Image 1 (spheres, helix red, strand yellow):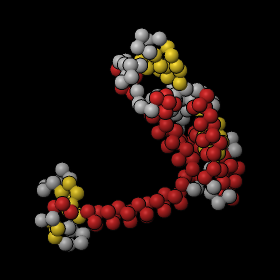
Image 2 (tube, rainbow, N blue to C red; image 1 turned 45 degrees about the vertical axis):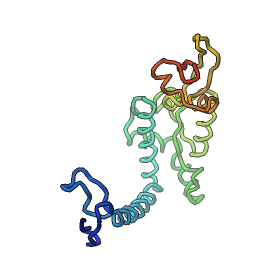
Image 3 (cartoon, one colour; image 1 turned 180 degrees about the vertical axis):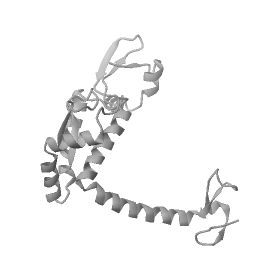
Image 4 (cartoon, one colour; image 1 turned 90 degrees about the vertical axis):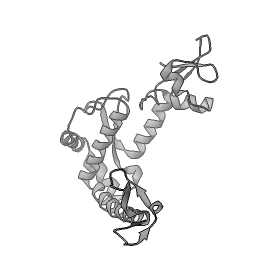
Length: 205
Protein backbone atom coordinates (compact mmCIF):
# COMPACT_ATOMS: atom_id res chain seq x y z
CA UNK A 1 0.00 0.00 0.00
CA UNK A 2 1.11 3.56 -0.66
CA UNK A 3 -0.26 7.03 -0.05
CA UNK A 4 -0.60 9.41 -2.96
CA UNK A 5 0.82 12.82 -2.07
CA UNK A 6 -1.66 14.48 -4.41
CA UNK A 7 -5.04 13.09 -3.34
CA UNK A 8 -3.70 11.76 -0.01
CA UNK A 9 -5.50 8.45 -0.51
CA UNK A 10 -3.84 5.15 0.40
CA UNK A 11 -3.94 2.75 -2.53
CA UNK A 12 -2.39 -0.53 -3.62
CA UNK A 13 0.90 -0.38 -5.53
CA UNK A 14 -0.91 -1.44 -8.69
CA UNK A 15 -2.49 2.02 -8.65
CA UNK A 16 0.93 3.67 -9.03
CA UNK A 17 3.24 3.81 -12.05
CA UNK A 18 6.61 2.11 -11.66
CA UNK A 19 9.64 4.39 -11.50
CA UNK A 20 13.09 2.92 -10.98
CA UNK A 21 14.51 6.13 -9.52
CA UNK A 22 12.08 6.16 -6.59
CA UNK A 23 13.14 4.45 -3.35
CA UNK A 24 10.27 1.95 -3.46
CA UNK A 25 10.19 1.70 -7.24
CA UNK A 26 6.89 3.60 -7.66
CA UNK A 27 5.88 7.21 -8.25
CA UNK A 28 4.54 9.12 -5.26
CA UNK A 29 1.51 10.14 -7.30
CA UNK A 30 -1.22 7.61 -8.13
CA UNK A 31 -2.12 6.80 -11.72
CA UNK A 32 -5.41 8.67 -11.54
CA UNK A 33 -3.77 11.88 -10.33
CA UNK A 34 -0.89 11.47 -12.79
CA UNK A 35 -3.31 11.14 -15.70
CA UNK A 36 -5.32 14.15 -14.55
CA UNK A 37 -2.20 16.31 -14.19
CA UNK A 38 -0.93 15.17 -17.58
CA UNK A 39 -4.23 16.05 -19.21
CA UNK A 40 -4.34 19.49 -17.60
CA UNK A 41 -0.72 20.22 -18.51
CA UNK A 42 -1.36 19.13 -22.08
CA UNK A 43 -4.30 21.51 -22.39
CA UNK A 44 -2.39 24.45 -20.93
CA UNK A 45 0.72 23.77 -22.99
CA UNK A 46 -1.13 23.22 -26.24
CA UNK A 47 -3.06 26.48 -25.85
CA UNK A 48 0.04 28.58 -25.22
CA UNK A 49 2.09 26.86 -27.91
CA UNK A 50 -0.75 27.08 -30.43
CA UNK A 51 -1.04 30.81 -29.79
CA UNK A 52 2.73 31.33 -30.18
CA UNK A 53 2.99 29.06 -33.22
CA UNK A 54 0.50 31.29 -35.03
CA UNK A 55 2.74 34.34 -34.72
CA UNK A 56 5.26 35.23 -37.42
CA UNK A 57 8.14 34.34 -35.10
CA UNK A 58 6.42 31.10 -34.14
CA UNK A 59 5.95 30.01 -37.74
CA UNK A 60 9.58 30.65 -38.63
CA UNK A 61 10.63 28.71 -35.51
CA UNK A 62 8.48 25.73 -36.52
CA UNK A 63 9.88 25.78 -40.07
CA UNK A 64 13.45 25.74 -38.76
CA UNK A 65 12.77 23.01 -36.18
CA UNK A 66 11.08 20.89 -38.86
CA UNK A 67 14.12 21.23 -41.10
CA UNK A 68 16.43 20.11 -38.27
CA UNK A 69 14.19 17.11 -37.56
CA UNK A 70 13.89 16.10 -41.22
CA UNK A 71 17.64 16.40 -41.73
CA UNK A 72 18.30 13.95 -38.92
CA UNK A 73 15.63 11.56 -40.19
CA UNK A 74 17.16 11.53 -43.67
CA UNK A 75 20.75 11.28 -42.40
CA UNK A 76 21.54 14.65 -43.95
CA UNK A 77 23.71 17.33 -42.42
CA UNK A 78 21.70 19.91 -40.53
CA UNK A 79 20.95 23.20 -42.36
CA UNK A 80 24.04 25.29 -42.93
CA UNK A 81 22.21 28.45 -41.85
CA UNK A 82 21.03 29.69 -38.46
CA UNK A 83 17.41 30.33 -37.50
CA UNK A 84 18.03 34.05 -37.84
CA UNK A 85 19.50 33.64 -41.33
CA UNK A 86 16.52 31.49 -42.36
CA UNK A 87 14.14 34.12 -41.00
CA UNK A 88 15.89 36.86 -43.01
CA UNK A 89 15.70 34.70 -46.14
CA UNK A 90 11.99 34.01 -45.59
CA UNK A 91 11.10 37.70 -45.32
CA UNK A 92 13.14 38.53 -48.41
CA UNK A 93 11.22 35.90 -50.35
CA UNK A 94 7.61 36.83 -49.56
CA UNK A 95 7.01 35.24 -46.16
CA UNK A 96 5.08 38.24 -44.84
CA UNK A 97 2.63 38.14 -47.74
CA UNK A 98 2.03 34.40 -47.34
CA UNK A 99 1.67 34.77 -43.59
CA UNK A 100 -0.97 37.52 -43.94
CA UNK A 101 -2.96 35.38 -46.40
CA UNK A 102 -2.88 32.48 -43.92
CA UNK A 103 -3.91 34.74 -41.05
CA UNK A 104 -6.71 36.39 -43.02
CA UNK A 105 -8.10 32.95 -43.90
CA UNK A 106 -8.55 31.94 -40.26
CA UNK A 107 -5.22 30.08 -40.17
CA UNK A 108 -6.30 27.51 -42.73
CA UNK A 109 -3.69 24.73 -42.48
CA UNK A 110 -3.43 24.40 -46.25
CA UNK A 111 -2.31 28.03 -46.57
CA UNK A 112 0.28 27.99 -43.79
CA UNK A 113 3.74 29.18 -44.96
CA UNK A 114 6.18 26.33 -45.45
CA UNK A 115 9.58 25.60 -46.96
CA UNK A 116 10.31 22.93 -49.55
CA UNK A 117 13.62 21.74 -50.93
CA UNK A 118 14.09 22.19 -54.67
CA UNK A 119 16.23 19.05 -54.86
CA UNK A 120 15.08 16.55 -52.27
CA UNK A 121 18.28 14.53 -52.51
CA UNK A 122 20.32 17.48 -51.26
CA UNK A 123 20.41 18.96 -47.76
CA UNK A 124 18.70 22.18 -46.72
CA UNK A 125 20.60 25.26 -47.92
CA UNK A 126 19.47 28.74 -48.84
CA UNK A 127 19.95 27.96 -52.53
CA UNK A 128 18.02 24.68 -52.26
CA UNK A 129 14.81 25.84 -50.58
CA UNK A 130 11.72 27.64 -51.80
CA UNK A 131 8.88 29.30 -49.96
CA UNK A 132 5.49 27.67 -50.45
CA UNK A 133 2.35 26.70 -48.55
CA UNK A 134 1.78 23.60 -46.43
CA UNK A 135 -0.65 22.20 -49.01
CA UNK A 136 1.66 22.70 -51.99
CA UNK A 137 4.57 21.25 -50.03
CA UNK A 138 2.54 18.15 -49.22
CA UNK A 139 1.40 17.70 -52.82
CA UNK A 140 4.94 18.09 -54.13
CA UNK A 141 6.21 15.57 -51.60
CA UNK A 142 3.68 12.94 -52.67
CA UNK A 143 4.41 13.52 -56.37
CA UNK A 144 8.18 13.36 -55.87
CA UNK A 145 7.94 10.12 -53.90
CA UNK A 146 5.98 8.34 -56.62
CA UNK A 147 8.21 9.76 -59.35
CA UNK A 148 11.33 8.68 -57.50
CA UNK A 149 12.52 12.28 -57.12
CA UNK A 150 12.39 12.28 -53.35
CA UNK A 151 14.21 10.84 -50.37
CA UNK A 152 12.85 10.60 -46.88
CA UNK A 153 15.46 8.41 -45.30
CA UNK A 154 15.36 4.94 -46.87
CA UNK A 155 11.62 5.15 -47.38
CA UNK A 156 11.93 7.10 -50.64
CA UNK A 157 14.99 5.59 -52.30
CA UNK A 158 14.49 3.32 -55.27
CA UNK A 159 14.49 -0.33 -54.24
CA UNK A 160 15.60 -3.22 -56.45
CA UNK A 161 14.18 -6.74 -56.20
CA UNK A 162 16.23 -9.79 -57.26
CA UNK A 163 15.28 -13.44 -57.59
CA UNK A 164 17.10 -16.28 -55.78
CA UNK A 165 19.81 -16.22 -58.47
CA UNK A 166 20.27 -12.49 -57.99
CA UNK A 167 18.71 -11.55 -61.31
CA UNK A 168 16.96 -8.16 -61.26
CA UNK A 169 13.22 -8.67 -61.58
CA UNK A 170 11.65 -5.41 -60.37
CA UNK A 171 12.35 -1.83 -59.39
CA UNK A 172 10.21 0.11 -56.92
CA UNK A 173 10.24 3.87 -56.42
CA UNK A 174 10.45 3.43 -52.65
CA UNK A 175 10.58 1.01 -49.76
CA UNK A 176 6.96 1.86 -49.01
CA UNK A 177 5.77 1.01 -52.51
CA UNK A 178 7.64 -2.33 -52.41
CA UNK A 179 6.17 -3.18 -49.03
CA UNK A 180 2.68 -2.36 -50.26
CA UNK A 181 3.13 -4.52 -53.35
CA UNK A 182 4.62 -7.50 -51.49
CA UNK A 183 2.41 -7.10 -48.42
CA UNK A 184 5.30 -7.70 -46.04
CA UNK A 185 8.44 -5.87 -44.95
CA UNK A 186 11.82 -6.71 -46.43
CA UNK A 187 13.82 -4.50 -44.07
CA UNK A 188 15.90 -7.35 -42.57
CA UNK A 189 16.80 -8.64 -46.03
CA UNK A 190 17.96 -5.17 -47.07
CA UNK A 191 20.14 -4.75 -43.99
CA UNK A 192 21.60 -8.26 -43.93
CA UNK A 193 21.91 -8.92 -47.66
CA UNK A 194 20.15 -12.26 -47.16
CA UNK A 195 17.07 -13.65 -48.89
CA UNK A 196 13.70 -12.66 -47.53
CA UNK A 197 11.07 -15.21 -46.53
CA UNK A 198 9.99 -15.62 -50.15
CA UNK A 199 13.50 -16.11 -51.50
CA UNK A 200 14.06 -12.59 -52.87
CA UNK A 201 17.09 -10.33 -52.44
CA UNK A 202 16.63 -6.59 -52.00
CA UNK A 203 18.99 -3.66 -52.51
CA UNK A 204 18.68 0.11 -52.72
CA UNK A 205 19.62 1.57 -56.08
